[in-house]
Image (cartoon, rainbow over all chains, first blue to last red):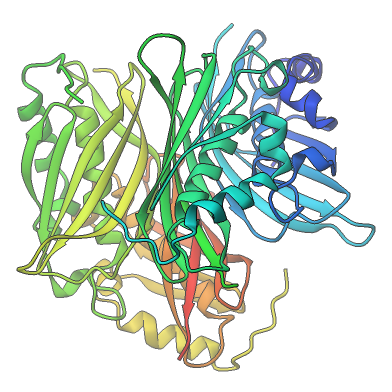
Length: 144
Length: 144
Length: 144
Length: 144
């Protein structure tokens, strides 16, 4: 889908909000791509992000996916808006084994108040990326 | 509901698994309560766990809730089992404002292979606890 | 939780809306209980509501649960409001075997615009009721 | 994705199971497409499938989506298997206004025991199809 942004500064809005997230900073996460309705966020494997078997913790996978889908939603919102996650569901499809993880957030249905978005999370290990999780979320706009 | 554990060592099983989670260590999370089908986990507010408005990040709230509901499920499983989250849905009900956060994980329906569990997350600020999130999860057992 | 309705006619509002649902009529569903934030809806087993093994179809179970949780939300809304389901997640816990099925809808968190509610569905067979499904939903108010 | 079925009779397995569903019969639903990991199911608008505003009831939309994603999963399973829905989440994106509704079920991640699948539901009105709902489900195989 090709979305038309209503705020031409959408990329800098996303970057400014992302920079304020202590959690993303702690994860060492980076914004890889910001297009209208599409935001990708990556993080490298770290020992302090693991679950009990040494894989990336579901919460870390989820953090990338929720944040990417939230900013995908924000990229289509009017200037001054903020985005909040109302709820999401995530399926953890395979063990989160890899050296790098990328969440690809995409808007499913934009709205004036409610936006539905999704994210797929891929693990990279030097070979082809592996789909490890998929998330479906409901976002709400807070007007500026 | 009163559940009967099939492994009398359930509490030490949960403690041992929890101790191996880098993510829980990073959050400074603690196991407050381990009963059959019931596990509570808490963490204090920290700057590196925030979202863009300074509240606890949804991923941190979710980490507590997912982990508490997973260990509630594990507490009813046979010796040697491990637990994996297949999927969960979480509703973020109020801003995660507080100095301490506690997730109360409870088993809804135990099973030989699939266990459904839930968690409510409360924020503490000195007054009455405030319900900030509710999570519903599907867990799968990996036999020992 | 004890909720205070803001519309004293909440019960007749729910009854009037329910009466307009062709789907509920087709299922022969009945409104058993309407309290502030709490609505119960029942239906009897019917051959045209089955899945491939002769149990109640997940969609019929879900219809009762979604409708009960939606009207639980509506019962707390101002006069003239309508309620729409944004999304829900349902866990189907046991085979839907029984002669009667009751969904107990309950509000988790009321709001001016967004209300989160849940429903448990029980099967009756002459013995103790059996929990067969649990649903967690996000509802939105449409002002009158 | 291109999936390789492990049972060459997958299409007749799906057809036989579908034919036993009283609920699908009641809706007048039809199987439009059965490929490995992909099943489409349609139904026409009917008065007895409506909610209170005259649109297709969320439960009818959901019935199509859940069934299509379940049979998409079944199409990849060994001979003799049956499929059960463990859980699903559905987002209702737009009013279900149309004369015909088609759910396109697709497997996201096949598995020996657990398969994750999704479905998009489109409304047809003579113009371009409109996406009215998206569902994400967890299915479990019952071996033959």
